[in-house]
Figure: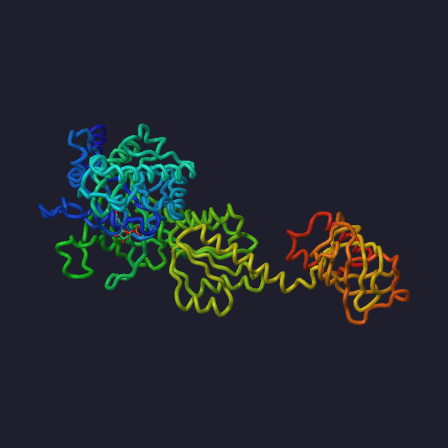
Length: 603
Ligand code: GDP
């Protein structure tokens, strides 16, 4: 057994750490990856770098070669077999995927444009990385855009910087200081990588250029150092299977396939697998394990290399039956000889069920749709903190049936007839249907943009409702007449506000015991010392008030100058205040309404 354990720990059984690259759009993520992948022209060889499904594999030999300029003393030792870098679009949400509590992403590169600093998606990425406790480094990219920068292709950063003019060095210092400050505002300590004495407390900033290749050797060296430092030793050995669905895709000739990342263990052709589906668990058998043809052999479009067996870590496409309803972000389990398939099905479904538990039981709320289980979870967490109720959830592109689900809110609560769609496509027919019935679709790549759009929409709906119902919104007040200036058409009186507040538009009446109230009309102007004001309160001095209406009652016959005037409330006016103006009605106003209800004999 001891021998077996030793064998399991042999060099052949090492597994590669998985790296995600994330950051705001246009910071240079794609370009950086391209640059690392780039073939060494002289040797015409990529050193075994292989393009996989949704990922690129960098064997340690290639990394050694690429870090040589900054590792001339050989002080960096390499204990990992290589590095698997995820390069699928939407890899941000991959960062949020977990298997058994720990992030599938072992390490991350957060790319920041040195000329732009921290941008909205950068901040969202930081939040994800923090939540998942994923170690990361920051590539401060585009240093070649510092004014007057002189290129030294593929050089180490420190040497390149020392060869720049004073002006360039100064600009760099300034931008570095700004960046550190911006990170501090996110409660993160950041330090230039070669000045960072404590990698577990300070985030390392590596200046890079994806155009000239400068700083990239430093970035790779740092990645390896940090991974080796932070990854528990056992994580570096092949062990139990850990596999996650990245994307579900229809491929001509293969049907629906899943692109997965095998982050640990071994997967074989013919394996019985279990994964999470939208309409229940999926159990099927691996028909083929596929990776793309190597670059030089990529003559026939769409042809793949078939594998009998693959070892972690890698990105691979799985062809099998019944994958139509598979969901991105799902875990994939292999049914072993001693496993009960049903137990495993329950296990994979628990991830989705955990999220379904966050759905509002009252059935009142918005519909939420996201690209993967991971991004859906992040979105739901955010909405829960923001107190936005969620009625239903789904994963993948938005189709008409999804909009129909959101449409059930139109009758009950129009403000919730909304779909918040994160990082997913909306089908044309679905959009057209939504426009037709009045379901609002909001799409965004940044979670809190969805929140902003939703709250702005709610405010707009509320304003609209307020405009529509303004005539029925009556704030309570009790008024004492000080002087009658004009008896009729219009009535103009000097008054003191005894209780509540008087507003322009408020209807005024005098309740009569045992009869209908005498209605004087609506307030059309309020003047304080000959100046128009919109509102008079209990604390205001006396004001002159104009009250207008058709057929106004006659002073001396219908009303007296010693009468107390009241705002003319009704059941409807009370409901309107409750429904649309709640935040504007103070506590005292509600108790005054209770008194006025008695005066007017409203139930
Ligand atoms: P992504 O959206 O983060 O993947 O960004 P891209 O890699 O597509 O880059 C966005 C733009 O920035 C492209 O026009 C790139 O050529 C440019 N870019 C990326 N990296 C650098 C860099 O280091 N220096 C300069 N000058 N431009 C860069």
